[in-house]
Image (cartoon, rainbow, N blue to C red):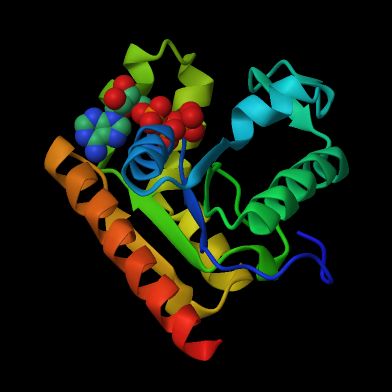
Length: 186
Ligand SMILES: Nc1ncnc2c1ncn2[C@@H]1O[C@H](COP(=O)(O)OP(=O)(O)OP(=O)(O)O)[C@@H](O)[C@H]1O
């Protein structure tokens, strides 16, 4: 959202984490429960063709960040104008301007569970290993902590359906409080 964009009355949340940790499932449940708009950044990239080519080795597309940020800014500005919250999900968090998000949830999944999920998804061995390693090394969590204020970054386990329920409820309750606090401010 642009610096001089519309004032926000609802929160913007980013769900991040290694591929397979449950970002899309969690974000869509949050959207369902709260009425926030779900922005599946992966889908947005496909829709707007934000690619600069393909990394065949890693079996992944190379992201055109500027194009993605432009496309997202339009969506975020519109949500702010409409008084709607945003729950975005993406496995990269450091590319977004810090001012965009009020809460960053970094989902974490244990090695054995993630292995099974990525295998079920048909990831090739190299892609699966890269992602497993990234999760073990907490690459995304470190990126989140480096890119945003410490107090808005939360690490949340996402191994079981119960974990997902806890995470969704947590964001839902946090959102209600955010709105109350915002109302008091105005
Ligand atoms: N907490 C959880 N408990 C049980 N199953 C889960 C949980 N989180 C995700 N899953 C399952 O794991 C798979 C991957 O989930 P999902 O697509 O939401 O992950 P993702 O982090 O969005 O992945 P990507 O970054 O590749 O889009 C799905 O089959 C989903 O149902």
